[in-house]
Image 1 (cartoon, helix red, strand yellow):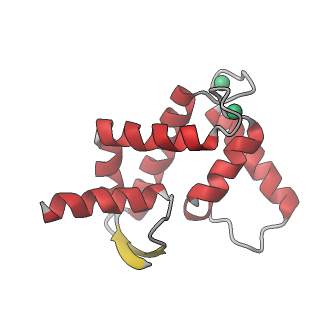
Image 2 (image 1 turned 90 degrees about the vertical axis):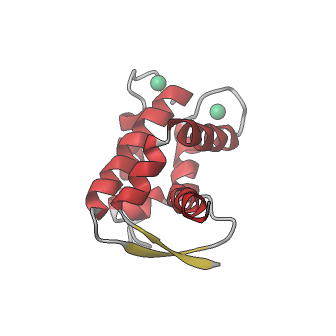
Image 3 (image 1 turned 60 degrees about the vertical axis):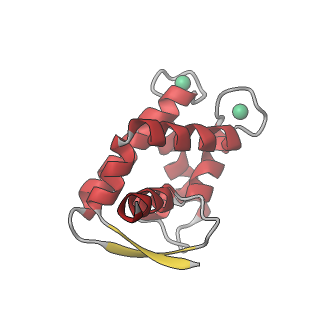
Length: 139
Ligand SMILES: [Ca+2]
Ligand SMILES: [Ca+2]
């Protein structure tokens, strides 16, 4: 476990690195598509957010949030992802909306860095963003 410092530019450069971003997102998508039908269902997407910890960082949910409110929140998130209202989220929809969310996080962070304590096997995109920046700095 380590601590990383993340600010808006860390997140932004991760999203703007098209190849790296797409690879990370596609890997995540494949892992989340549990039944391998090529799309994310409501429950698969919910698991995604629970795993990737984007909810806490972006939507300010904490452990005290009642389950029924969480369900409402996840529903509204699902609807944001599902642009064409097909009832499922495909790879393109997943990538596009994730990009929006990460850019919104970047705006929120601005130039005020936050510290994040991360597990080494953390699946968070913010961890990936931090790793990418670290790899650029180190060589
Ligand atoms: Ca699926
Ligand atoms: Ca859709």
